[in-house]
Length: 418
Image 1 (cartoon, rainbow, N blue to C red):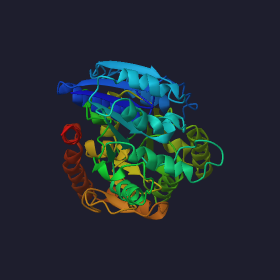
Image 2: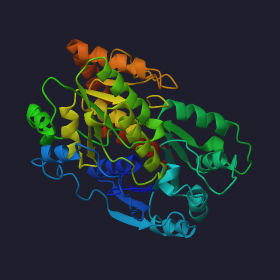
Image 3: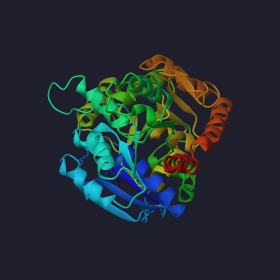
Image 4: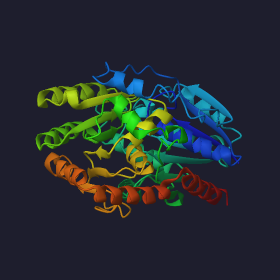
């Protein structure tokens, strides 16, 4: 089987979709599948100046090395093109001519919010009707397209979905929204009824690394975290959907309640795809200063996976206050589960049976800093509750391994080949 994975971002560019594509390519390659990756030209993504504490983080990780040995080539070929131009359709057609499956990893920001990618399935099917085209929606945020595009932005999403042989979504809420809108599609030229739709969750882009099994106490000490301090950990870029301002208010509430806590900001601040993250990161930093908690925050910055894994292991509680609720599409949540951390997060918009409040996670309403802080304090006060959630997270993480995710993809591909 020959598979082409198309992604608007790919390492060394920073972004969850790129990391996801890398992990999926690796798993396919382990099974002897010929995998090619078509991605964007690398874009510069200047990071804001590091906050106080980044020097300590770098020192703490200096003995771990720069990687875990898994950065090697895991695909047959890698091509970088400009997705914003319509000539990219011709390039992709040429590069995937001998492929059985062309699988688009879609997130509007990763393609510069531009329209060409939405026409790719139609073009490829016209050029070669036997070539199967799939799309995975990593979220359903609409593209910009052009000024005053209005409802055409959502129609671009449904047009892309209806033009493929198969559609993959990563979470129940997106599945419900997309299938309802596709059913309402009335375009007679779109054979939406013949497309296959599957829910396949994502996995952790940061796998627990054997090289990260260092002395936890020594790592914390070198970070400047005392033995009597609780280290909260936030992972991911700072943007409004991830609740950065709520995160800061939770930390302030926990400290005001008399608890000796610090917050580790783990991961790049802005990423490579969404320029609005820059302004939001500055807004969050201003709030830290306003609430007087800046000195309690450690900034790790963007680090190699093995170092990220080590920092997860050095933390006590994962604090992930998503503004739109916890979701299976969040790689940051998957990483916390994979590292068996007790997690405090926000109530999903759509019920997710795998997330059981009080068993493998603690949940509170989005933006409710008081309730989230109360959950953090409950975990600080109860080692038994921390152990229970840690065990529950470890069990749940087995549902989202890359082996299982690859199995589900291959089952879908075989179905399309029938």
